Length: 162
Image (cartoon, rainbow, N blue to C red; front, top):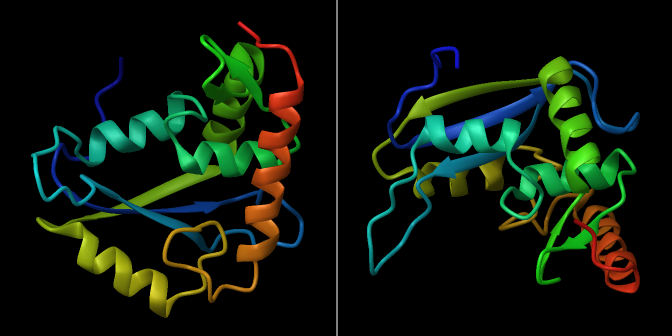
């Protein structure tokens, strides 16, 4: 595995795309922000920027709201897997999504010891169409929420995949 330039520290990360996942989204501009670790009042997290960014690039839709959003926007079929509670795009489509991200996604970050405050500020002040949490004011919010809900409904109607 190649060494990662992303630090193993707490912070905020932002995603932009050379080729956006939909033609009505702008290429090259910030479309999504996230944090690592997330705020947890009762316990400490082992998450950091490096782990979280790596998971977004290589994980699956069940553990990455960004991957879930991108896959839905790209028209991938969401499927129930395992016991049927988790939903991913399946091995082949998750691999295709990882490749699409490697080709198109770019990530930036800033180290921040308590990143949740900065994340809230960014979401409230910037046009971040791929963020759902804390972002009801965004013009794309309703469309994205419905698109993801449709994908989940379809997945529940299909047999459980591998």
